[in-house]
Image (cartoon, rainbow, N blue to C red):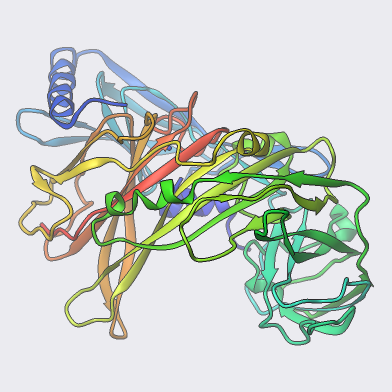
Amino acid sequence: MKSSLFSLGLLVGLTGAGCAGLEEGEAMETSVAEDSASQVIQGLNTQVTGTSPVTFVTSSGNVTNSYNQSATTVVAYTRDSTTGAFTAYPGSGAADGSISVPNVPSGRIYLRVGSRFLVSTGRTFDLGSTEWGRNGLFPWQPTPVTVSASGLSPWQSGDYLDMYSLNPGAFGYLYGNETGFPQAGATSFSALSFDYANMTNPVLLNHLAFGDVFSLAQMRLQSSPMGVPYRSMHKVLEANLTHADGQSTSVSGTFTQPAATGTFSVDWRRSAFDALRTQVNPSAVSTYNEIWMSARPAAVGQALASISGPPLLVKLNPDALKTDIVTGSMTYNNPLPATWQKVALAAAGFTKTYALGTATPFTMSVDIRVDQEASAFSAAPVQPLIGPVQAPLVNTRGAFQTLTGVGTDASLRWSKPLIGTATNYVVNIYRLGTSNGATTATRVTSLHTDLQSVYLPPGVLQSGQTYFAEIQSWYQPGSDLATSPFKRALPRARASVLTGTFSP
């Protein structure tokens, strides 16, 4: 059994996959003031507590369980502004999802939960999350599924298949590398075979116990009245399926067209996203831009990945250009419940390469994205709601250059974005390595804060190693990622900056 997405995120520091503070100088003064204040009143010790409810949103109703924190590392750190030294206050987690750290002095703390640090003056933390689908099992072995079907609209180049199951939250894509994939003009196929374990979220289906339904949608290439190509939900095959890890199963059925239809239109300012490329990093490369639109149960708007998965109603990535687009009405057929909330995601991708010595470079991918209700996309131009942070520093030196001798107690600082108002920041630290002649990158920690600076706690940086950082600016009104790291809300947006390399 694989861990749930939430479990993996908690243990390895899952990025918010995809949220104004003070200027950099002011942030330094504020940090000093807060640390000094904590020294003055350090006799006022308090208890740090947290809970970890995980709500699974399913077709048959929501279920809330607690994430087992008994094996999670829990430590609260305070920092002395005069010496720069961190003091550790060990805590513990319990099977009921609670965490506790006793006798912690008042003031700002760095609360370590697993590999993640929450930088806050708070003393109560909500480590809970919302996930779409039940807490099911994942396959460890190849698990072939073979599908025979009729009823397709004549297949055309550019169509693809969208696999999903609403109750367990399973999903994945079939683009044409599968055996028996439909050819141009086909209205049926007899032996489409794929490995279910390779799907994006391959929760094993169990119709007998949970009523799971296997769905396969024909996403059809179309053109809007403005001549913009897009893909939209067209026909859907549904079949009952129960399968097990490592076992082959077969399903058959007929694609039918849902009775409900809809339209979606956007004024997409792609140039506004691409204009931020050099703020991501002076050497960043633009890679893609796309818009996805779908529908979700309202509760899934709080989930870590509420937008980024099937079933998609519209997928828009017409070309590799960065010019602005007004689509006009894009039509789709809708098999999803009419009461579900329609949501949309716009993202622009960027990459930067990192290399150790002569090893093949590692390519790091980040994005600038916006998640909103679909109606907001149609009502106003789609453009960034938050921009990248400005003037990132490692200690006092510009972070875009290659830096050595930063020390194991380095700090990262930045100025607020030029676009939007950040509600929080997330700093991800990656360590570079090599494997089989290629450069690798391993995330070693994530730090959540509402300030424009973080100090790296003990153990994050190791002598002799090389690192880089991703600094995310988040816009998510009404939510504090420093005390509720896994909570999400709409609207939300984020933008990333990639630093150069630095070493102690």
